[in-house]
Image: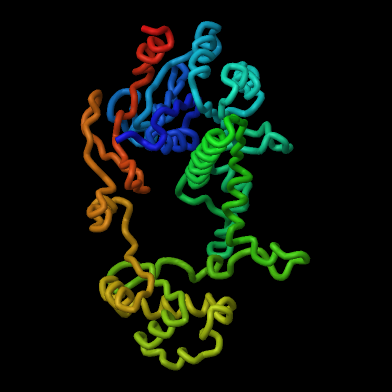
Length: 381
């Protein structure tokens, strides 16, 4: 069965994580993603450990379902080859700052001259019209600059980075969504366009969904932030034998929790009766969970909470995620064999399409593995 984007060709000039995640999402939907790499390859190829030379563990799932071609864009011959390739493409993606792309000769105007309805998606750190446009950007920088790192100060007293390249991944999803929207626009109008996805602005929008608080109003009515999330008491709770997320949320949830823990006196407490009143008392509520959590095992908490429809899950170590019963039941992971390196764990796309199920068409490519194939097609061979 053909993928949703079958017949769409994407020339992917991105590297590292943000752009390759976006192009992988599109490749998983059936697009022909041609990964254009410099002679030394995407830097993610170098990260240890490796399945085989030039194919790292991180590279495997980021770059499946793609073809790799090596082009040295400092060489006239290879720039001419890229021009011919772009003329056959529906989408061009890159994550270089604007001046660098202009120096290489592949800004939007040039690509549009090669194909009039091209979709040209540029993903980089900061919007091109702002004073930060020339700054280099990586995930840690965006966590710091967007206000995200500062969110931990309420709990720990100091800013901190999430142990995840959170904005590379969020912005990668934003890039994929932007390309899909531009493809729909072209389908309806016949017009291509230039699309900009700046990490800084995407991160601020992401942060302020819930953190804008009183600053959303003119004049402001209260501070920024979502008080529940900034509580120093908000954390996984220690149980009698481990840790769990125990999260009463609704009025009924809290009533059931108080009854279960023998705190019937708190059921009618005006501080805790409604969501409106609870907003000013999250520290006290979470402290109450912390005091009670250690009195039962994690399994006992999960059983009680499931019976009462209270959100609850054990804290699962990352190393144990492969053995989780739900993960196994939905077949999120599979063992695959890479023809050039051996077996590896593949992660399927988490979104399911009934009319176009996901298929693994290609394993992550070796550097330049498809150069002859792609250039031969351009030459009519």
